[in-house]
Image (cartoon, rainbow, N blue to C red; front, side, top):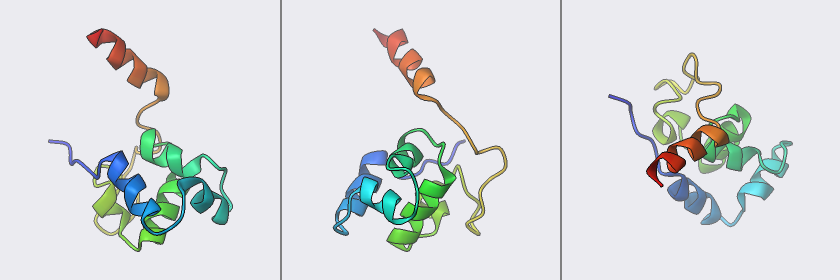
Length: 95
């Protein structure tokens, strides 16, 4: 069974409650302005994930247990999981 992590909206809210936007967090860490959003939504930005986890002072395994090992190292094969296109395909099947 896959380990579920935090819901993307919960991650965004937790960051916003610290007084910073995801865009500003990314820029403060020398990343593209969308890196943290991409980390939450499409699983393609390990640097964005690290910026979020470090900012919240939380082991990334607690936020994304399917992407990280308990020691905080990234799981093998988790560099890219989903793409925007594949998510839209799933939605179109429902319609």
